Image (cartoon, rainbow, N blue to C red; front, side):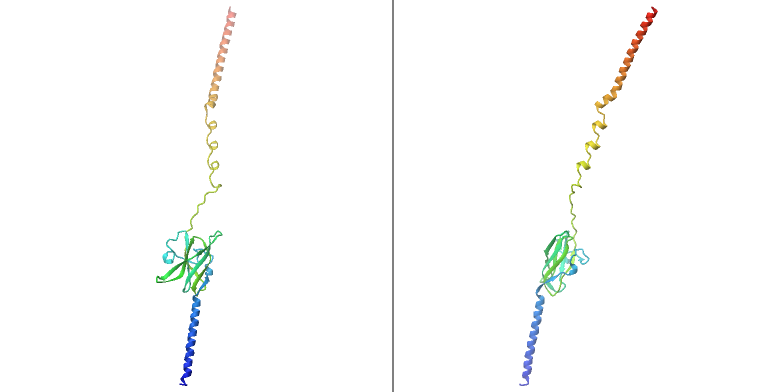
Length: 231
């Protein structure tokens, strides 16, 4: 019995040590699984959906909703390691100086009975720029990524013409006094025609009558003189 006693104590100490190591490992694993904030991959910041940094994939099989508007971009984020997103928040610029912060929609994948949430989705107007993002996640990953995007087609915006571009009646149309013929310029009115066509005929008739009268008077005078001489 005296020989076996030290072995018994040694076995007890070994068992206690094993429990302690196991407890330490469990605590470490639990610490890694705690929610913590992780940033977006630096290479995926300041990018548009059609960037060469991302694959361009669309469709429900690629976590893009079927009701995504055609003029919206779809963005899908992913954790590179095992784990789940708790939340994802991203900041975008519209390219004209305004920024918007958007909460992503978590996308369940895997078995319906035991889904995982390592994907998240955001949809917003086409052409916007992803400035930055961060996530709360149950993971040991140091960052997360944009796994792919589905670029939309921007809508053409029609602008009304400015006053300089619009047509005004005085500039683009012809006023009656410029290009149309006015009655007094290109057509002959009765008051303009009568003096022009009637006056020369009247003068000619009057002159002919005067000459005829003068000739008759001269003829009578000559005959009287001739008769006086003969008598």
